[in-house]
Amino acid sequence: MTAYAIAHLKTPALHPDVLEYMERIQATLDPFQGRFLVHGPQVDVREGQWPGTVVVIEFPDLARARGWYDSPEYQEILPLRTRHIDGVAVLVEGVAPDHDAAAFAAALRQSAES
Image 1 (cartoon, rainbow, N blue to C red):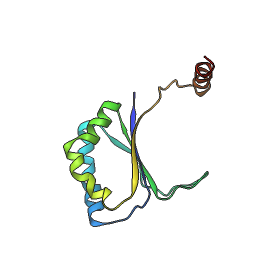
Image 2: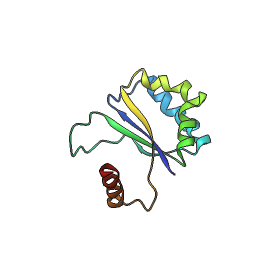
Image 3: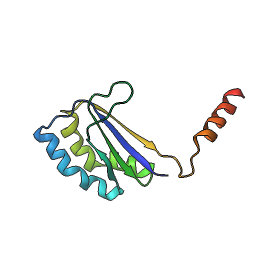
Image 4: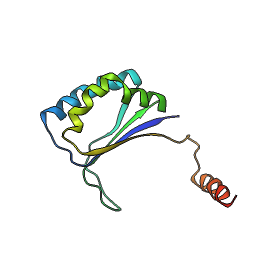
């Protein structure tokens, strides 16, 4: 199942360390087949508040996403970003191509009623 690394970067700032992080991150992703889907665009907020920007990286599965994040190569460069940008990062598994929200809701409703 496809997995994603999602980061909400609340205080994006261009600092020499952040630029170095950006220059080096792809080399940490390649061994785990990670690829950027979203990388720091302007955010069109429709509900609530969203200070900052967002990054989404796709991986073939959750094991590779975890392997990338925990790898010595990524851990070595991570402080280059975290020292200068406040944010939150999560790893999450995607849904199957045939995911049906209504069927998912029905299963949740049935389990809540049991």
